[in-house]
Length: 414
Picture 1 (cartoon, rainbow, N blue to C red):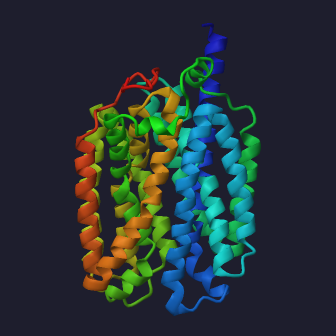
Picture 2 (picture 1 turned 45 degrees about the vertical axis):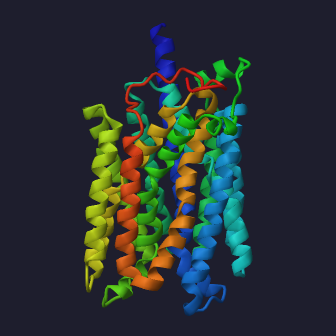
């Protein structure tokens, strides 16, 4: 390859990582904007303080259900038609939905539009990570996915800042960011690995392949379970911080929006250290195990903070975020476990099924709350989810440096 051609390839790769990073930035913005504006928006459409928690959980559960369905839809499209098709289609859908969200006037329409936004949001991260892992060298792809996560997670900070100008403005800004990104994506190139598989007669995007082989199904399930504690921390411990603050005897109301902001700043910092630790140790499994154990420590500090102050809340959210900053590592593990012909399906569905796991997590948490109260239930759920995640991690093979240029066969695991 000539120096000119090599430089062009390098520029293309850099552009691809940048576009994937900005896509995840908008994805996180739109994914978390409801958590940040939950109380203000529900109050403005007439929801009483007594119903705030129940209605808010209903809407977030509907959004997460959209993510579940969307993850399946976009994952299959990514393997059958290409990763680029997903990047364009998903962002168009959730951008339109976010504009519509600025004009809701009741809980049901709010939930329906968040469902549509959830379907759209589901395709962004999986397609971006799949493209990056398939394009960068096996030695450097960990850096690529780390950059995507670090830049992307600052979307939470942008959502928090936009929400200062009102919840309707926050949704409009989210829709506008998506449409701007859509224009930037013109010129992105398809994965070379996908193009090779596209020309072959191999089965592509066959979701059923994950269930026709026992070993393959268990591997897929374990990939989902290792990420559940992260969404418990974000979706329950932080999102319900106003309620946890009351249970802990806080003298001032805790802000879920502020908690989400500092948690995601922490996740960005954590993702840098997780990515570097994986590169240094050449082990994604070891990295995941270290961060899972750290997340238990920080969650216990939060739940044990009787009379928690505003400053302690902010710092605790930051450190909880750092401890669950394994998102990029977790998604990369999923991408590296499966062949090119179902890699998009896996990489898109796994993080969205983890997000969707918030539905049963919320149900289990609420069931515990009835008997044990908010704080004790918080402890119980964190311990249970961490044990499940550590066991699942122990059942997966190390994938650092694995060659990804292979396919999954219909009968058996490649």
